[in-house]
Length: 346
Image 1 (tube, rainbow, N blue to C red):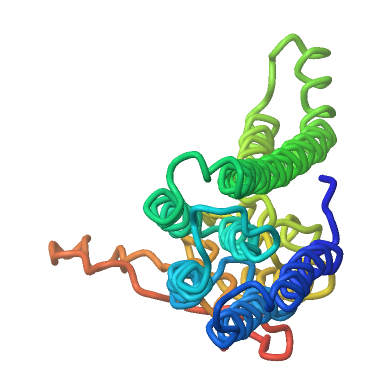
Image 2: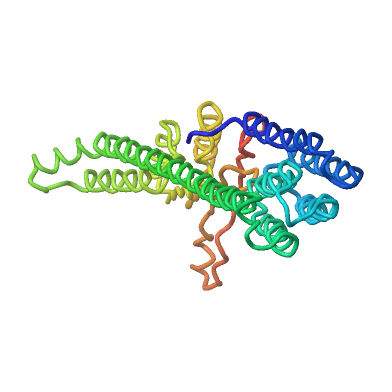
């Protein structure tokens, strides 16, 4: 978006304001008493300096806007009280352009409502002081037009700024969405390649044997099916060490469940490998019948929680006693910080 340097705008406004001050001093000989005109010049200069202060915010403070409106009411009264409204006063009516400039600055700094009030005060004073015809001859209409142009431009620029921010936000969201889609596509490709690597040999064997598998091959197919489910549900909980540990646990008869709920997506590189290696060690080091590993919730210092459950003693059921609940054989919380990762308890 094309923008105009603020310093350039302030300099132009200061030049216009200074020109009105020069006209005010130049015409001091026309008023009956120059003191009110000098006071008006000082008040106008103060209002201009404060309104054009370089470090001030873009939106004018409301107290300053009301002060400018008060200045617009004071200038015509001070200067006009020493002039004859029925004659052409020439440059002595410098305050008309001064009020228009001050209200233009006020409107540009996003106080359009108060700028219109200041312009209206100038119009009303001129009508009562010199008549409706003086609105054209004294340049009041021109001052009002400048205020109107400033209001329109300020609103257009504000709308353009809002639109630019919305477009930038939409572009950022679109970029993030595209990156997420590319990441999902890449992850699907990786998972698909891993699945093919796992299942392809067994699928070829099934085709070659026309589906006639012995008991050992059927069991191996079940293991492969579980491994494929791990690739879908486990996602980032898997590396080669975890895959080997899970397969070894299943071969000895354990039921292993891996659940990745997305809370460790921000862990990468060596930190993730440290967490996964600790998970593999935990699975290898337990003889539990059921092993559940799942990612912890968002905001938790724990990356993965591992639970191992051992079945109830079958001897108790044989004697007719009520079987107890499964016993917790393993409970491990693997922290997100690699420095805190330790070996699982014996």
